[in-house]
Image (cartoon, rainbow over the protein chains, first blue to last red):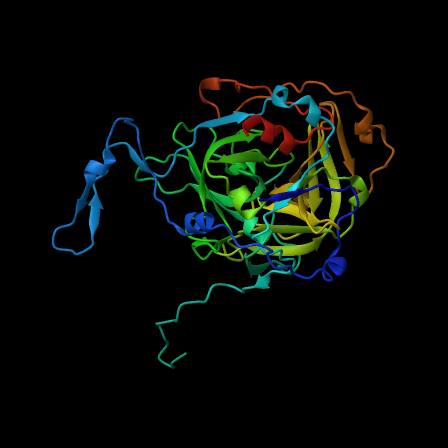
Length: 136
Length: 292
């Protein structure tokens, strides 16, 4: 599983120092169930009525193969609403964490460690369909 | 006076990149709905970074304060419409905690921690967090990442080698001033360095910029240890290092009185919980234990 690494108080690396760090490949394969979960699209439907059965609203669209439609009930939301939004409570901080100056980072063994990301440039521009009379 | 963003210093040095691998896949785009009921689309967006198993650090001013029907979606490694990790690599936000409420929370308190429904940090990894140390001032250690529309909001972009040129302590929080390029969409993006152990540690989150007439630097809300509410100190050019105002380390821990008004809360209500950093605690630490 994931390994955490303690932070240290020395200075961070400058770009001139970081350039000597090579990217490191993952040492394990990502678990199959995780691969499946991350590749699987999910759509959440939320309703103000906790007892509503949305599966009853899913219908095959007549005359179109493989097409389904969903008549959403009133006050339903595509997405997963948030629950709480608050200012922090300092009393909730355990005493054993007082005085800590850092929190650890974590890299799962199934991810590559990339120090130097590949530059992508901007998204490819769509071809310009409008032209002047001179062809430019 | 701090505005959402003051812009670019000289030529724009941000470069778009492909966010594959650790730690780049841990940074993503945050979409905010102030009202999720139809036909509303997302209200605003910003940037964020995984700093725990299911925790994302971002800016407070993109959080949907005051809405009973809010929603937030975090997409790590967002690139051209989806995550590079996979189309299922995203999570809705279950809860958030902020240092300051409202959309006007620019500056040192402009920090929120989001709790995700899904433990993306366990799956993709996460950044560490580190209190800023003034001995690092003027060192070109830092990288800023975000999704600024001025570059492209569809791909992340980064700038490295940014020094912190001044710090500004305001009671319980610290602003990290720099002249890295930062514009709309960068908000909430991580300001971080890589330590000799090879791991990235966030020292702040992108907030905004001071207008040029007041100095013109861009601002990150710094991960900072508690100082007295009386303390307002500043380091940087023209500031005496040994000024009594700079001796935050010697100040006693004390409760921070809440300041109003609270624009994100309805009917003049006060926040349900008080906010204070215990001395030598750091915001992320407090957040994470609070909503884990």
